[in-house]
Amino acid sequence: AIIPIEAGMAIVLWIGIIITAQAFQTVKKEHAPAVAIGLFPAIGAFGVLILTQTLGAASIASGDMNLGADVLANKNAFELSGIHLDGLLALSQGFMITSILWSAASVMLIDRQLKKAAYWMGAGAVLSFFGFIHGGTLSPAGGTYSIGFAAGTDFAIGYLLCALFFLFASKLKTR
Image (tube, rainbow, N blue to C red):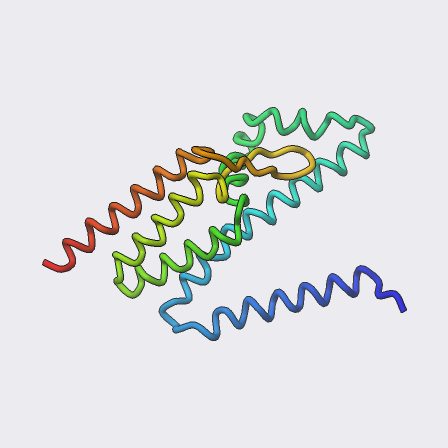
């Protein structure tokens, strides 16, 4: 028997709801914000998926197969409508790894383990420097990674500054 896609999607959605609920129920109550922070990159990836699917549908409906590329080329239109396209793309690239990094660092901050939070941010600096997270471009077909040496220098600097701030704050905490 073939399962209709609607039934399959309902099952997948239900599983996602259960997993999300369990994520909040099984952690210490004070760590719930870290779970929520870990959801942000996945929500960004979902936004990119919906955007690219919509652009594809619009291209097909209009008969203009360049429509999606033309729309993506006009970043000003996105900004005027309240969407920061570059930020959404950066958030989505490597979202599973980013979710882990941000959640782990958040837990360390909540538990006031600032040095450990700095280590997680250091890992983020390395991963973004090489483009495993936050690096890439967006086309109507979806996001593509730009993995390589110094592929994500700007994000690496941001993570490094966070790590240094947490290390500095840890020194103040011990005094």
